[in-house]
Length: 495
Image 1 (cartoon, helix red, strand yellow):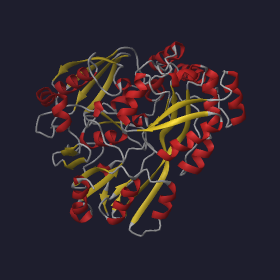
Image 2: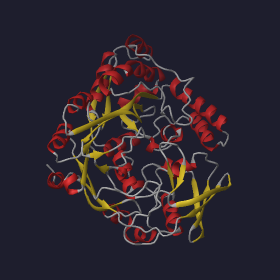
Image 3: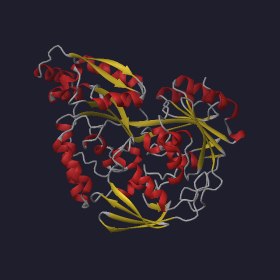
């Protein structure tokens, strides 16, 4: 048991006004722009604010750190900022912080985790103490979605003083909770921000303290929940979720989310294990080997559905009418391998960082057609390094699009030529570049449809299934789950 978990044992629960939630993955860097894990997205929503807020029920954009915004031209957005907001250290929020944040994270040397989230920004200029203008590189119709998502505002003076290393250890924002401790490998502690601005669209935080603890073993997480050491867990396996429903002191919620599981296929790998995947017939065989319906209905469950394209169906641009939907057909898959020159199959590697049982099921499916994949089960940063370097021929991953309801946050991130693009297909890149900069909605959809059709025809990937998430938490907690897979603890309360 880690020190953070031990502390949670003593202090978790309604009696101590301390909500302790547990997850299986550690955030490599608490700074929101320097990690792309879901745990980091949750922390970002707790401790930072964005310029705009998107109401999950209505889809309406509402003022947050910006009170008004207006397009001056297709590539210039003017925003008036909220006055009277302070950062957790008492610094006054102003235009300087917005200008510094976006110019910092869009710089050529910025080592941020997901450039897709900000690479549409050319620069930001200060028009007044509480007015800014965002200059776009090209028209980008999804700009407001991003300004309401993975683009929190840093405190300029503090960040300049401590740098990224100091900021990752003692970060501050303007959000509903202050981060009071970051303990590598163990978790993050937060306390309610008493100075949180009263006109925030998310309302005022209700719970006094919120602690995030890292408990990698699923059995240990469930045991901590049952003993009261932890108040909230998620990603509970379906069979365990059913058993937890019988306990009177616990509440279990489940439902489909925007997160999609997939196997990335390195079309241009640098290792001998990657060589076969340069042939589209081999990639098609992989798509036919994986039993998507079986994974969704038997392993994931809880509303999971098979997925055949690198996007989620509610996202603008997720046009899948012409997408090839590969059936589960091991016989045809083996025939394709033989046509490609691998009648006896071949050995390769599959990298994974989550749901080991899912990865093992996929390996079993691949083995049936002769693809003998060795499992490398590692932490996410290690997997990302192997994928981006070209050394991982196959990797089982998941993507939640930062909860952005636009296909640019999914398809664009993995197929527009960036660090996570394992296909690097010029035609697809051009289509997506055009789609993301076209103002006309019908034209955007048509370009996405063509890109997704090509991705599927060339079997550049193997999209698999949508995730359902099972949440289990103390019955003392009033908590509402959302399809965007962002637990809003700042809206939770004790009963």
